[in-house]
Image (tube, rainbow over all chains, first blue to last red; front, top):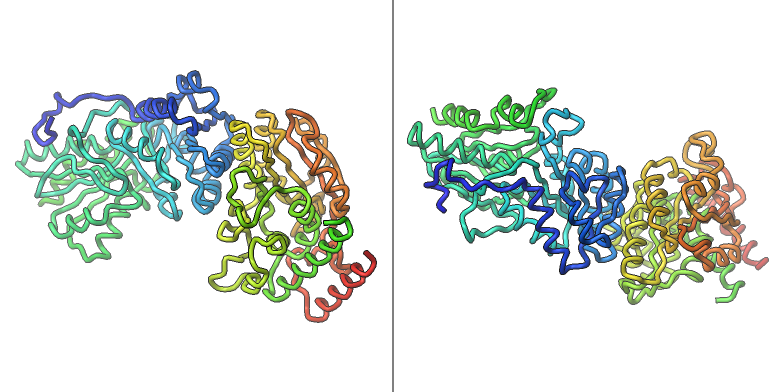
Length: 322
Length: 274
């Protein structure tokens, strides 16, 4: 399949990324007994019920106690276990932030922190259940890789790589089924943005579940205006793929970033900070959740409201290309 | 090490921790003096740790949750040969790893601690891992009584008994004071034994300055099969220096030259009586 040529209806639909996370981990745990999943009454939403049934010795339940979740995971990792601490991203990266900062990152315990139902996945449940801060707060902590995979391919690759990693990492997954935005045999590595669509008039940098609407917007730009837009899945926010940003700076074309995150301190600001300090002159716009009381609604409605959508990105591209 | 040598060691460690606090002009003096006997017994009678092979996976773990009393830990570790004592000349200086809280940059330190309420959850993870691997080593942590109100401790108390972690030993340096005042004034944790027993722990109380009592308690676990072990060590903040004992300003007070000389002469007198 060639993503540059394919039309929307031919995209292959996949599962929710967090389901693929659970399945991948399950396949790894069958042969690697050092994998331990730590849950905070979160095995259902983490799709880990089958994991718990198959590998009861490899799941540690701590109850609804996120600080203990991360502390225990740090202790397990320190003892040589490949510990995956799983909780909704909103709780994991807020309630347990000090444990993440000290017990995981500072103490260099290679815990795999897994934030599920991230961003506004729990749309209508409201701000308590949204994680719009996790990129920003974790970017401000030394010794933390931050990854938000776009599709099932990136998710599987990220989990396989994370299991081998001897460094703290945060993986962020949503719960909406995602289409495959990957061609066969593509390469995946942390810190290297993946070009999912070539283009030379404009670049859209997105991550997680916003890569799909970014791709849709690029298709629409081509159909409507004959504009050729490049789409990058910047799955790793830290370390950022600065070599790829250097290329974009050299091209000098407009850049739009898209993220399921408050714009303060997220993917867009990370890119802008690097590019501006490098003297880049590209026109630049960040699409994300603004710094305001978040509108109520489903994930899709919230996306539409803030322009994290095919039409929203398209409109922004039209403005930048004027 | 004989009992007499162990007692002399406690005096030596007190002198040393005061020496480096005095030199660095910084440190948690009162709490270091209250917990140093516990550290002496741990490192000289209890813990199976080897300074030349610290990373041995079968070692006993000691994680100091009350990280601010790092001076007591550092002098104990250097005395046990984890690093040369001369390293402590750099305590709290620019680019030194001997900072005001434990860090893994120092040989012998298990975890970077300092924020309170973090030690016990990590120990629960270590203890679960040891159980999964059917290993015999034990996990120890030292808690301050001032950090007990941290909610993370109570999350960990629940999980330790849920997982029947009888390989886990939490020692409380119960000096009954914290920076603002007595524990009772700041946040009452009375009936602690009842609370912990209700949480499923097996609890023993000892005189935290009686080396033989500490030795006996820490070497005779688990107190009850299938239950985590809690040792309430009754201690005195500033123990060993008359003018520091139970006096709040010595929480992180640094002695003047005259006070330092007086402290050393008091410790000399204590030493002469052993």
